[in-house]
Image (tube, rainbow, N blue to C red; front, top):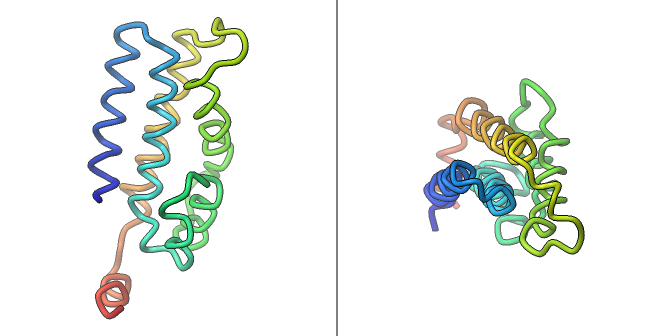
Length: 134
């Protein structure tokens, strides 16, 4: 399974939903995109395989951040995505929180996570040799 390609598709869906004023579902897809982007590089983290088939985005990020130091701490963004992933799909309370501004915040979070994955979590020759020697 190619998590990165899936992340791109889900990220695009979040943007399309946002453009069509479907803010709650845009948030749900943005949260899923964050998870998929993180999963796409887990194979490079020391204990990443422990989280590859879970939804534990907090520990996914922690494992990646141990190996690839982010320019800024993204943990608060990951926690926000974890909190609203289920809440946006299965809202129990007031749906009025899913405004344009709120959904934009999540799209911005996805962009930050994607930038970290694309620009910081880059495999070097040792990573590739370790992966293919297993």
